[in-house]
Image (cartoon, rainbow, N blue to C red; front, side, top):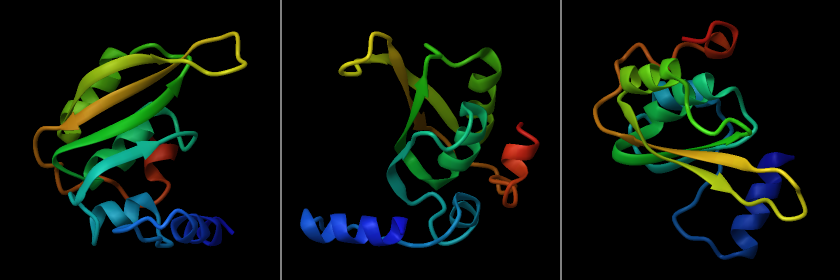
Length: 132
């Protein structure tokens, strides 16, 4: 259903250079899409530590990862260490205004500065079951 929705959105908005594939981030990050994306966005997928392992390997050097972090204003020291291990660095942590909500949310931008070690991302579900 998600693939159908996305395919319809691509057609409706006449988006170009966009495709939909059914795969996992772990598989894509180890094979055909490794270090190829200019931008990756992650929202409501996994805790930030896991989102880093899933997203950073997809980025080419200089690419940007956006993690919608919710209530957490900035990454922890450990999350920053994991980003560094994977080749990324925090560029910005900012407040996201949410209409009709009397609370604040946050987004973190990471930039890929060096190649991700070959062992990442680990096989499917391992990043979420055993975070770095």
